[in-house]
Amino acid sequence: MIPGVVAHLWQSTWFLGAAWLLTLVLRRNGAQVRFAVWFAGSVKFLIPFSLLVGLGSLAPRHEAEPAARGEWLAAAERMGQPLVAFPAAAIQVAGATPRAHYMGAAVLILWACGFATVAICWLGRWRRMHTLRHSAKLANLGELAVPVMFAPGLVEPGVFGIFRPVLLLPEGIEERLDAGQLKAILAHELCHVRRRDNLTAAIHMVTHAIFWFHPLVWWLGTRLVDERERACDEEVLRLGRQPRVYAEGILNVCRLYMASPLATVSGVTGSNLKKRIEAIMRNRSQLPINLIRKSALAVAGSTALIAPVAFGILNAPFVHARASSPQAQAKPALASPDPALRFEVASIKP
Image (cartoon, rainbow, N blue to C red):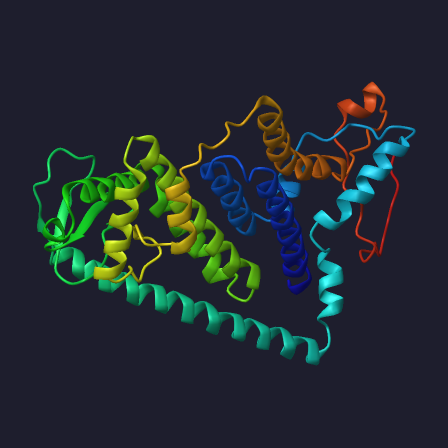
């Protein structure tokens, strides 16, 4: 089990490194594209390549093995070997000693403690927000895509809920922000709703809880929050909001209210505040993705999915066909005798 986990970890790490290089190429494009790349890196931790290889091995097998195998086919199989899970026999041999069993049990217990700690921490924060949601009162701010409610306390505006989201606003926010700032903040939160950011955050929370020991998973969570907030900022500015009014609204929220403790509550004060304000005030138009970059993204995504399946097909066992006569096909095959059975008496009659 441990060798397979190690193989999955280094494969996911290399995949995340490739995603980082891809985001460098897309640094002048919209934040939504980079967010999608980082989110693919998070999902990769949940989907091992060995699973895709196993799906490929279920493809229809050949009736007879080809007489000669090309050099390119042999090279492709050698490249695919690291993607295949370790054989069960090798794993049993590696863990045959009592010391290996104790080490494996200790590693499993340590992982379970870390998983429980992260899960309990997130559950406690969720209960706090759930209690705040039940104490909120319905607000009347016009026709919006989601219900808007005023909640007591000094928690920043945020969207709570995954499948039935609710926009929570602190009580008295309409008196502390002017009309332009409040409309810009509402536009930012509604952008989170349209993008389903709470759902993607929940998926990464699962990745975070399972692979809490991997430092790149923590770093990946920061990158996801940065890009999702920048994507919403770009959308708000595209809707025609004034950069100065929008930036002042964010600063006032940061000055008056506390950030949400839960990652699945999409707020307005996330990410690096200084960089966000500078980007908002510059208000540079993002370059659209041209055909070459779209093709590169399509090829990269297709390769990540198709290549492991192809390796599984190449490594699938062949079924050899045997020539047989019509008489042999008409008669049912006799079961091979058990070598342990012996006849005491045998007679032959015409």
